[in-house]
Amino acid sequence: MHTEFLVVGAGIAGLAIAWHLHRAGRSVRVLEAAPRTGGTIRTVHHGEILLEQGPQSLRGAGLATARLVDEMGLGGRVVEASPASNQRFVLVGGRLRALPSGPGGLLAGGALKRRAVARLLLEPLQPRGPAEGESIDAFVRRRFGPHIAYPLIDAFIAGIYAGDATRTEAVSAFPELVEAEQAHGSVLLGMMRRERPERPDGLPRGAFTFDGGVEVLPRAIHDRLGEVVRTGVAVHEVVPDGGRVRVVADDGEHQAEHVIVCTPPRVAARQVAAWRDALAEVPVAPVAAIHLGWPEGRGPRMDGFGWLAPSKERSDVLGAIWVSSTFPHLAPHMDLLRVMVGGSRAPFLTELSERALADHALEVVRQVQGHTSDPELVQVAVHKPGIPQYVVGHAARRRAVESALQRVHPLSWGLTGIGLSQGLQAAEDLASHLIGRPPHP
Ligand SMILES: Cc1cc2nc3c(=O)[nH]c(=O)nc-3n(C[C@H](O)[C@H](O)[C@H](O)COP(=O)(O)OP(=O)(O)OC[C@H]3O[C@@H](n4cnc5c(N)ncnc54)[C@H](O)[C@@H]3O)c2cc1C
Image (cartoon, rainbow, N blue to C red):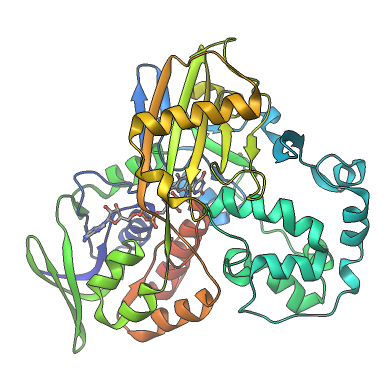
């Protein structure tokens, strides 16, 4: 079977690039091993309650995200995070402290001490550092001082990557910060001078989801792609073969001019021999997402986005999202929160039984939030192998993979950006490269 573009894996990255190529009138086929598409995105219906087992929200700041939502006709189904969720908390000294929001909030204190704020303001005077190969912890210490690196960056890296800030590479995790330093000699000055791109109207700039949860987006793309997508077909090998690429799959052999590999790093390492060594060095951190729900008004305090736990405060939890407060439509008549456990700081916890994980999460909520009654709803989702870690050296590994082959292209959160918006931007950029023009009008 021959096609111009063959996409391996139908998580959001694979679906998005397939859509861009298909819409541009090119011949595309998508092969997905699982019986469903969407990959890590999964919204489970529990009566009228929607439980996000993977990502909870998208970020509207990304232009590619906004365009895709618009193209799918989903603008009217977007639900913006509630204003209350602008308030985030971090665990300091065993207590939840409000995180400063914006420069005014920084000066007012809260989670940050005055000397931390004073050091932060000296950032423009610090000398330039290396463009890559430095951890985000070292980068932030050097530019903003030790009190921002810990607890704030430590907690953020736990929240986003379930990872360790002393191992996560600055340029891979926060490229815009390192680029600002390199271009302007200062992150603060660089961020102030940054140009803001034009965006389609009507889409929120901050966090949002859909009326039916995040899975609305991959479902909409899958529906538009129709028979382009084949589920239940695992790909075993991707082999460049002269001016073509040969793909060995459950349903036989395929030929394509270009193959886009959108599978997780461990899988892609098995599929593409030339990437094996570089991808074998991308670690993954397993995580468990535990939902706990109480009848409305009977649960713990929830008046913000939730909280994060810096590693020296607690290693047995990453943090919790207050779902009811952030997206009340997901949990009508219920106080619902989601506790995140495991990550690179405690991967062994994800080996516990579902029951033990739920008991552990409840005990953590009792200790941190002081709430005692038993929940009515308990649901546990374990992600293994888990979240890819962009450890120091990641930028070099990514270059090695991207330049190894001419007709086989990587596109996945294992390499090209950890969040949904980054994945969607990478999909749009790669589609532009492959068809020689932007995929949108
Ligand atoms: C608990 C959790 C919370 C998160 N929260 C957020 C959040 O709030 N916001 C955010 O922006 N991001 C969040 N993320 C990250 C987000 O989920 C990812 O960026 C995104 O889903 C990755 O999509 P992907 O398509 O790159 O990979 P995946 O979703 O991993 O898709 C890979 C696909 O490849 C398929 N596949 C595997 N093997 C084969 C094979 N042999 N042949 C064919 N197909 C195969 C898989 O079945 C899967 O469908 C979160 C992640 C987790 C785990």
